[in-house]
Structures are given as C-alpha cells and as structure tokens.
Image (cartoon, rainbow, N blue to C red; front, side, top):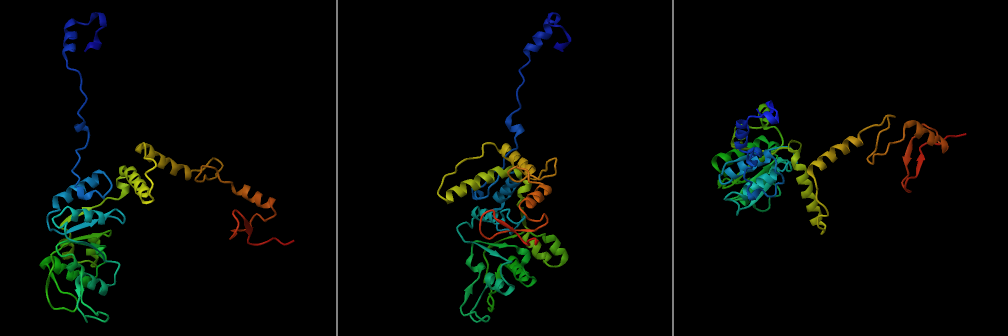
Length: 320
C-alpha cells in the first residue's frame, strides 16, 4: 500500500500502521529441515545419512528386541550383512554369537551338514560328530546370505526350524531345540522365484516378517562424499598414516566427478577423443603419417615389446 503514494504525500496513518507491523522473521530451521530419525549406536558401522538409510535405522531400532525373522534385500555390495550385524548388536541376543552362512558357497549336502550338523558315521567321511551353525549360535543370530540359492529340500528343513524351532542333525533321529533368530538376505527377487517355483511360498512369508531394503548408492548419492571420507580415513589408518586431507566441499566434489567424466568422454571439433589428462589423441591420419615416416606401412598392426618402455615393433615387415 505504501508504494501507491509518493513519499511526500503518504498518509501518516498508513506510515504509523506500517511502523507498528512486526518485522518479518525467517522460518525456523526445523520447518525447513527434515526431521532426522534416530540412529542406533549398533548401526555405527553402516556409513551413510541418506533418508532411505535413516528409515532402515528406524525399523532396526523398533524390531531389534523381538525374535521375528528378518529379510534383508538389496543389491550386492550395499551392506546387507552390516545391517544384519547391527540388528543383532541392538537386540537382547547381542551377548550371544552371530554366525553368517553363505548359502551359495556350499554344495547341498555340505550346506545341510553346515547348518544342522551331523553325527559320527552319518555319511562317508563323517568321522566325528559336528555341531551345526544352529547349535553354535544357540541364543544368538544366524545370518543366511543369498537365501535364494537354498535347495528345495533344505527349504523344507529351514521351514521346520522357523515353525517349530526344532531340527534333526544329519544321521540323527533326535529333535534338538533351535533358539536362534534367523536373518536372511538376498539380492534376487524372491517373489519372482516363488512364482517360478524355485522358492517355497510358505518359507518366503515365514522369512519376510520384517522386511529391510538397503538402497543402492545410486539412489543415495548424497552419501558419496561421506563414503569417500570414510575410505580415506580407513586407508590412512591401515598404512599408519593420518588422513592427509578431507573433502572441503561436497558439492564441489560431486560436480568435479561429473565434469571429469564428461571431459574424459568428450570429443573436440576434429573428431579426436580426449584422454584422461584432457590432451587430444592424435587422429588416424596423423598416426598413419608417423608410421610412414619411420619406414613402416600405414596398415601394419603393432604389438608392445615385452622389454623396453615405449618400444614397439610391427607384426609384419615390408619386403623390398
């Protein structure tokens, strides 16, 4: 309203009202920032503060003290075992063992003996009685990695463990009590495996009581600088040298990575690609001229010599 009148003709009442208006305040920081979810201390080994990971931390904190089975999904290398270890550390089973078993690293017969154990003479080569992972982890957690690789026969026995909390070692008729929490992980699509008949539907629902999905790094790119700093510190501690430098600007780092990729894959106006240093590679015509100047045919194929840096020789020699 004040802009409608010249400064000399502005009514005094409007000026007084304008002066009495409280000054504009910036919105509180809490209204702009996303409310952070609590991060359990047990998840300290998982590096990342993205919103997707914070949701995983929140679910872990809520279900840690239960005995429900947990299914952890995500691509290879996303940290599914770290999440499982954090879940175990936050639970009341933290003082008991955490045992990881890779279901795809053993043949079917060996995996059954590895999980359930066997008695002496159960099969050829069973000279002594062996405790399985279920018995070794009594009161703790058993982590079954790549659960989709489990055979149908072993799926039936694992289903009995989840339903009745009992099992029989290989070659034994006794029923042993299984006081363990089962945490399974896979990078495969179990729903598609159920549809194709390679994975039991009842076992899928027994495992998928609590579902945790670990996002890939491409879905949480804001964690790239955090991971870079973590690996720099880890590498420096491993060789006994402190971290030489930190990343001054995360935005500058991400932009630098993108510009570096664009620079290495670009081409100049003459059609010559640029190498990692940004220098243009010589064109095909220049390479052919350089070969002709030293007495080799332009179409000769070149091989690197086994000795001598930068020494090359043609695979065929032109005869006079």
